[in-house]
Image 1 (spheres, rainbow, N blue to C red):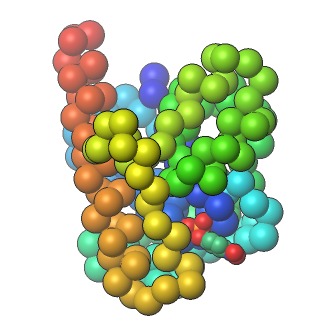
Image 2: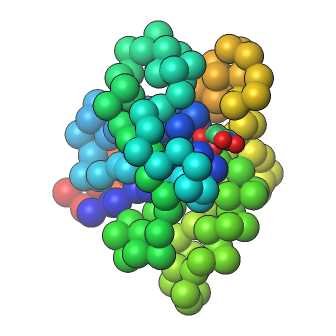
Image 3: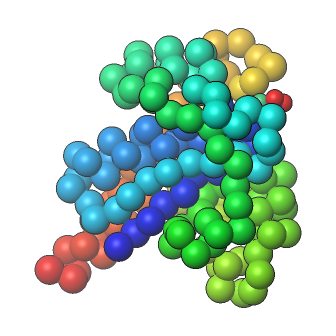
Length: 159
Ligand code: 4NP
């Protein structure tokens, strides 16, 4: 089983998109995986994704309107196998909560799946315009597709 958690700061702009995109990839490729998302901060707990993220995702035929923001918790290290963070600040915050090396090893920057070793951030679109949300989608889509390919290869090896 591959339990995947997408993490950003507020869990209303970037990680809900990453959750929606990754779930679509998992469904399309019939992968054995579950997907969730969380934020390192508590500001937006219980809120639906930002309207601009919802609208952009809808444009790409992905419905994220029913998601609800929650905060990352230490238990997530047990509940998930892979924790993908959107930027280096999230990376620092999540790693700071790790209890041991096993926890730490689960945390990776999402964009390193697409651009290995580059340590690139998915830019926070919160204070910008609509283009920022499309940029987030394209970057996230690229990374999730590659993760999907990788999980598909693992699955086929096991069959
Ligand atoms: P996210 O974007 O981390 O992609 O969900 C943000 C959402 C809210 C805030 C910052 C970033 N905020 O400062 O409230």
